[in-house]
Picture 1 (tube, rainbow, N blue to C red):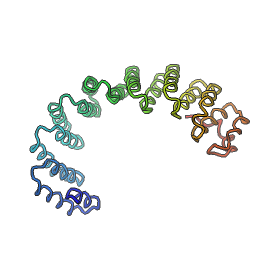
Picture 2 (cartoon, rainbow, N blue to C red):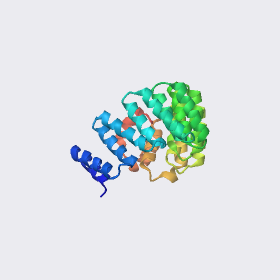
Picture 3 (cartoon, rainbow, N blue to C red):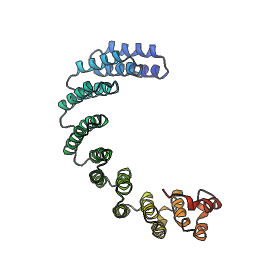
Picture 4 (spheres, helix red, strand yellow):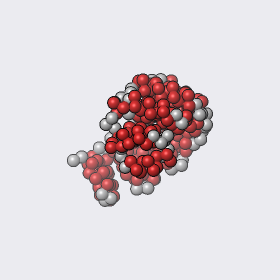
Length: 283
């Protein structure tokens, strides 16, 4: 077992003195390995020995001054110490050393966003998109920024782009749906968007459920919700959640006889559903 693993073992067992000695032994054996100072720096940081942590992070940079990752570690350390000016300097040095790495612009963008320096964050995210135009995360980052500022129309455009770039990522689809629906009340656009998702992959159990929820909540059109769910029933008949939403849609207009026909597969007893379902929000 390597010394680094032994050190982590001692640290996890709260045998801090032994862990510190093991980390120091690792450095004695490999004094020119930058990662050893990262390990010891992280150990001191966790122990709230911040001066020693900083010394080791700086030693790591001294040994590998052209590695941008080293400056990222120091920038993160300074950020959590509320030493924001020093953190910014380290982030900028990181980017100076790797000016074509889109992820580093994402990191400094998040840094600026947390400090409410939105113009700088926006500039960083724009550079990230320029460098990684096919990465959905580039667009969700910008979308989050705009949504934070209540620039919902702009946020929606970036969320939709992220959704288009990764049609299998339903988290991104939900960003579009929630923003268009909850923030902009553009339920027709939500409906059209959900229909596209359903056309793309009707085998995903979430796709018909999302459209049914929109019919129920935005339009109170329970019949359309039922039709959607029944249309794709054969694809999802083994999914308990599908029965739940189908039962909810059927129960809303008090179609109890139809509800009873699917009751055997529901997760809740029929009397309970009949009693509660009209008060149940489908979301």
